[in-house]
Length: 125
Image 1 (tube, helix red, strand yellow):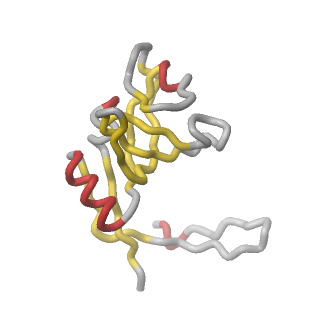
Image 2: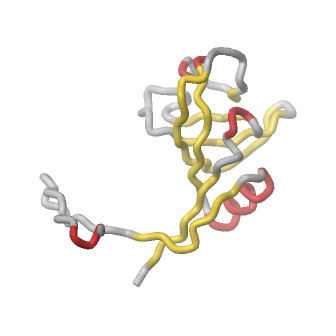
């Protein structure tokens, strides 16, 4: 089990710690995701990546074409509406040079972004 694993060496000298989650649950509806973000903060999600997303530079992303390249994870931080389009505000781990300084906006319902939300409340002993 995980309890028997040796702690990894941290070059910086930092102490390696494990954290656990309680109450892990999925969020698969737009209204539930909005409620969760408003009440408790950002959530994690998984979504399909298509060729056109790899070329994203800014604006509200909607699938326009290309083949499925795989999937990725992102953090949904918030939501908004611009010119009648509802969108999620998300953060990627692809660095600040990508998208809108490492963030992107994506239309509700696009490429399964709001079908795979996951939340886990921290277990603190």
